[in-house]
Image 1 (cartoon, rainbow, N blue to C red):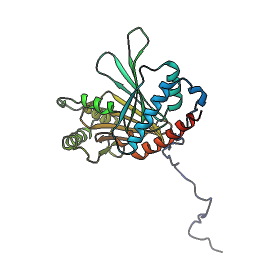
Image 2: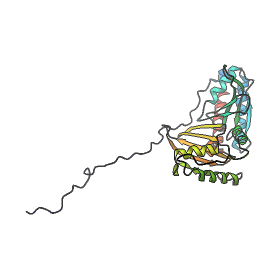
Image 3: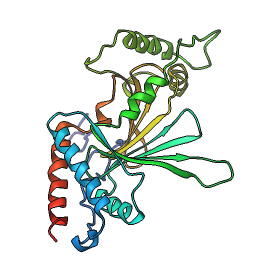
Image 4: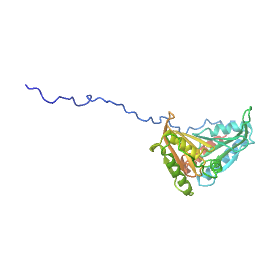
Length: 292
């Protein structure tokens, strides 16, 4: 028998070897969901009329918000310590928090969303050198997002945009064009307009481009972290209606890096259906607590 002139190659399952391994981007594995707070027994509320009244006010504001009404505030500054503990226990801690630096008096507002979406706790602290921080104000705001965010962002806006002078820094390539695009969108933005999103993750930008972009947009005093499916970091820039929104997976690796031109990023806000759901949940809680 003559030799076959073409070399035989084995085919079929198990006969092929990979020269390269695929490196997939890790996706989030954990997701924060609603967890009902550990509630006090009804008898623990005996004599705590201030806590009851404050929670009833929150419930009424949620009902108003669920019907499209305006946000509202509930002041907590004069409550007794036992009333505070009950309110903390009923509200719990949700997935969103924020820090807002105020302009004077070394004041800082720490914001924590309750387990009821759209219910925000705002605690104002004064920092004094060499001393512990002092709580100077405490309140609950009910609404899609604390009004302090937009008010502070408006105060942070530059009177005039800084223009880069001289040669660009090394390895800065596409950032100047992106800055021009963002400033153009900012100048033409109108209330109610759909957000304009610049997806930096999909663009050919270098780390130096990102640094140059952030320098030209500026950094404001609002910093928010939303912990849902992974983490989302939201901060205002020094341009009007311009926000930096960066998403991370559960291992803190950036999976989406964006600039949004909008009055308030949607991811930062509680939706109308969230307010309706929160109203229903808190109504059930209050009905149980009143069953004494």
